[in-house]
Length: 298
Length: 159
Ligand SMILES: Cc1cc2nc3c(=O)[nH]c(=O)nc-3n(C[C@H](O)[C@H](O)[C@H](O)COP(=O)(O)OP(=O)(O)OC[C@H]3O[C@@H](n4cnc5c(N)ncnc54)[C@H](O)[C@@H]3O)c2cc1C
Ligand code: FES
Ligand code: FES
Image 1 (cartoon, rainbow over the protein chains, first blue to last red):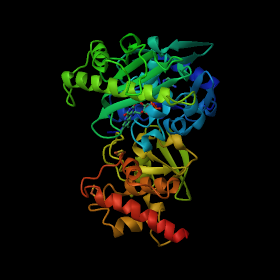
Image 2 (image 1 turned 45 degrees about the vertical axis):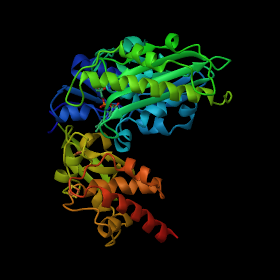
Image 3 (image 1 turned 30 degrees about the vertical axis):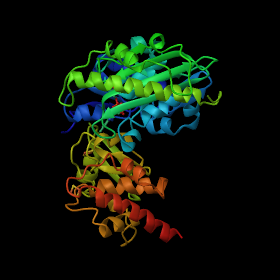
């Protein structure tokens, strides 16, 4: 259980990082928090010839919350983003999801951008980025591109990052007024990867009827599965007796979109069932939050 | 190729020459002879290897020693002051928060940082704080009691 040997690079600036990455090309890997990469190295599931450690590149340790959204730099740890009151105010879903990512001690090292690049089909943050329609900024020596979430996640543990590229930041857009979000999951133990999980975002119109509703599901496909359920949900009046929505129909609409697989933790049927239950739970919670936000009480 | 690194471990400046692939856990145990930090799984799951990096608990098995060159590390050996056990250590002894002791260094480091940030936690918060540490002996109940007891001792000593 020891990592294979590699050549180590510890650049101190973004420019130097991009130069090293260009040099080592397909033989290099970026080391961020190491909370996914080092287990893979210890188990000898990966053996890169060069590791480019970005932990000294202080200019990547940024969290910028603006009215339009939150931009998270490559060295911002899960714990720092979770604690950021400014990030929480602009996009509450980040904090809601991060509480479910691993354990507090892992969150002290792991990075938000690293989690996106790692693209585990059970990970929470890729679903958050996909649900919000966010993007990842990729830099290489002499160039930069912004990749939308829909094109960023290309398969299980595969993202659009090409050899020689560094993911410098990720952008999580804010939602319009009268919006609410939620992340609900079932895991075997708190902190484990989810057996099934659903992120939801709901926006209400001026009469507090559902104007937009979307979910993103984890652990039920190679990449986060995003489903727009606005049509099935609304526009329904938010009656005081509860949301006048056919939740079973909403759950079924999402269940029809997913293609879960069986593994040692759960059968495909169970994952599909869980996803249906979590879709309802997450949408109700998001709708409730939307109706009780700063913009006005129901 | 070896890298020359300097760590401040439990307040003492320590130097080592290590290959880049040396895990911090192995650097502490093998290069520096501090075997109090235990190694269970080496993939981040058990928490036995938890140490404090500039005061924050981290998995030493998921950290390369070269990455933390120049930083401060506290291991279980550094929790006591002089000959006196820390409040967290005393509480674990008092409440039987350990049996074989294999998991204990990780629990002690995790709980020490947790109680510094949250001196009066409720049950739920204690559970979440130690959820990343596995113990095969105690059944956790006495560990939970010990964390609460440590909070009490700290409050008594501060007051
Ligand atoms: C016990 C345990 C439980 C966990 N549970 C969960 C969980 O429930 N949910 C969850 O989402 N995650 C979980 N994780 C993973 C954790 O969230 C990781 O922190 C995260 O997946 C990767 O972030 P990192 O910064 O540690 O990346 P690293 O491990 O450093 O890197 C991961 C991969 O991304 C690449 N990479 C990283 N940053 C960049 C960059 N800026 N540019 C280009 N490439 C980059 C690396 O080359 C590598 O291939 C768990 C981890 C452990 C050890
Ligand atoms: S040895 Fe590090 S977490 Fe198990
Ligand atoms: S006391 Fe034996 S593993 Fe915890």
